[in-house]
Amino acid sequence: MLKKTAEISAVLSDLIKSVEFKIKHRNKETFFTRTVKLTFSIMMNLMIKKSSKSIQNSLNDMKLSGNVNYTVTNSAYTQARAKLNYTAFEELADKTVELFYTDGEYNRFKGFRLLAVDGSITVLPNNDDIKKDFNPTLVTNNIDNFSKEIVQARVSVLYDVLNNIALHSIITNTCKSKDNDLIVKDERTLAIEHLKYCTKDDLVNDILPDPRVRGISSLQI
Image (cartoon, rainbow, N blue to C red; front, side, top):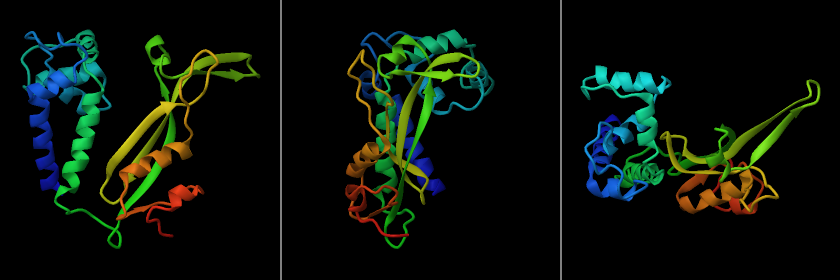
């Protein structure tokens, strides 16, 4: 498994460094055209390897490790990050799944790929750009006469539990608003959308009562 992981990492690294990948996943044609400290490939690797450290500490580690010989500020990182399109990470995720299963060497349960769906609610940054796609929720506390507006998203993941790899993920709005027509989906709807990424050789954890979920090679465990 370690050998496979190394091979996949090498393919993804080459993909990130390619001109075609950069052109496809930058937000404007003029972005990442000049010689800059935070190149497209450096930014991609920084975001992929982001740890629990602060952004500035991660940037400092990049210099200490010898990857670069200059200092990068938090502000420069934020500006460079805005030039990246999220589609880059979608392509990397899809490519990872494709490469992982290509050789047919992966863990199975009685011949099946063992999958499960898990959903959750996450809190997003409360800013105007985020609110264009996710409606805020007003949280109140009657005891303290306190109210606060928060922005949330519903996240759902189709996961291969024996091989520790996510096959597909969705992030969507959680609540409706009379001010817009943003689409809202519940956990059951998102779970059903995952099924298009399943095959007859998959064993999906039957956690939902919907017959469309039970109908895909699902066995009682």
